[in-house]
Image (cartoon, rainbow, N blue to C red; front, side, top):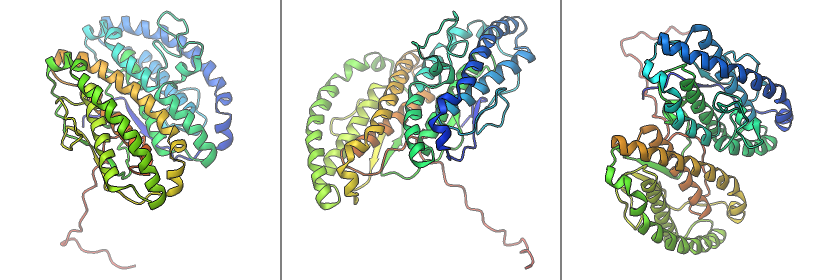
Length: 433
């Protein structure tokens, strides 16, 4: 994997102070004021940097350092507000915060890309806004015209919290107050959104010439992903038929009709499965198979419509689609979890809604890219596949297929196991002490 030069550094231990969590917004007020003032200066510095790079081919050293510190500082504040990090951040954007980004060294940039940088950055800025890290165009909740563009909620834009990150912050607030810890999935997802936004604004501000990459593997560290009975299987090669891409929604109409009809049957099957699990402690085998096929079919249709996959899917939810969901056999389930399943699923529903918006944005941007190039960009494809995976885990949890809660970390699959290290038989052993 070719890592992006603007990359995430994550050293957070998940522990949260309940007192500072409860008063997080009040504590952040000085930072919000400072970010607004700094963002005004960054706006004019960005304009000056654009003219300088247009004539010299690169950003001046002083402006590169100034704007790089602004991006880091906004990321730190976004992490603090979204509860992706716990310590009170500094006011200078110095490296070393638990959720930090690496800003690359100054380098030459093509002048023609510099001339059209604002236009080229629009897709990345749109995706950053949906992922919830939009310290907006020119900075700190201000549009290019200098007016507030956040509908009366300037701290959301200036801090990078909105959309997916906002949901992570809200859910993490309740979890941190109850547990004294931030759930690792919510922390990772919020950090992912912050890191992608740092890439988008580093590109806009000429800190790097590399276009933002929404692939979780290119954005952050080697994310962990715990074992789960509902897993993503990805065998897509990225190629897309321009003809079927252009008519994708029309082609999907039969699937929409069949999915709605099957969904009605799945609703009643899930109710029956809930009663069976309450009395026996596990799903009924026949209902498990029926609901598992529906969950797979839902994932196939979602992947087809959003251009995460290319082939026309079948109508029965059989395994083997390029973007598929692997579902384990029925296992024992906790009756208390089964009884309160709908209430327990509310946080997953909220996060699924936010990720559905990200999937929609990836599909819209991917539609234009696939028509132009005949391929779905890997970053958009992987972001969409992650959304499909989380949605499938939520469906499985709600339909009593499993009582394993959906996991919000953004990787598609667990990182590979490290190769075992074997002792050299010819190397002498250390002497005993």
